Amino acid sequence: MKAIQGIAIYVLWLRELKRLLRARSRLIGTLLMPLFFLAFMGLGFQRMRFPGMPGTEYSDFLLPGILGMSILFSSAFTGLSVLWDREFGFLKEIMVAPVSRVSIVLGRIAGGITTSLFQALAILAVSLAFGFRPRQWVMMFPALLLMVLISITFIGLGLSFASNMRDMQGFNLVMNFVIFPLFFLSGALFPLDDFPSWVRAVARLDPLAYGVDGLRAALLGSSDMSLAFNLIALAIFSLLAVALGVWFFEKSDSL
Image (cartoon, rainbow, N blue to C red; front, side, top):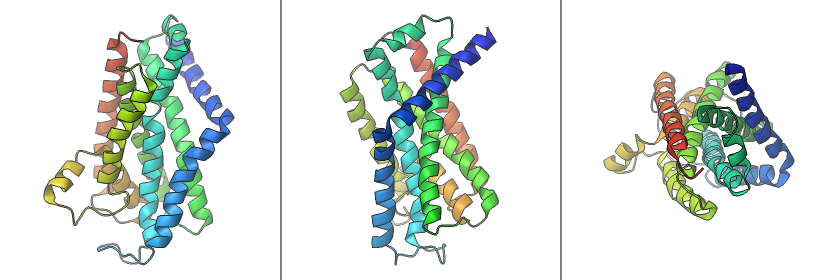
């Protein structure tokens, strides 16, 4: 029985990977927006400096935020594939297979992680080609772990919404309403030090804030909180998000 569950996870992961590789327009589209942010904002604010981060250019400060943004958007909209599969009948076919709903969720999470990591690493490769260098190459390993945790967190969130919705346009509107506040409160584009204290308090509830701050700790060697604290906080958020996604997927009567 465990072998069947494992095969189901693998098949769903492979399906998402093939969809990514075949949909070149989707791949190009998801890469262009973060690269535009990185190029134009990095050039426009290149003289900006940050307290506590001597010698850090804005383009370097911006890169972890852009990586987080890419993963956030790609992961959160993984839930859209659930609505597409429901629309075209594929979801009904896999629901009658002798596999648990948990395996179906895990397969989609695995596929979503691969997709979002591919896009984030492509952005990182471009930034390396244009001269960015991490402070220590060995810190790329915790950076990758942070990217995975960010992806898991927002895939779980996307699946939670998708399990309770039937309209794809409504899903897009709701997710945009949720995603953009999370993005701007994360400190991805600018430090939150000058914001009111209540805004900074709300930002502590944003999982992406810990992901972006952790990426800055790993890649730049400077952050508001320690790398270990960011990893632990993000791991807790990812576990809660996956548990929530699984629970809504199992309880949903619209699948």
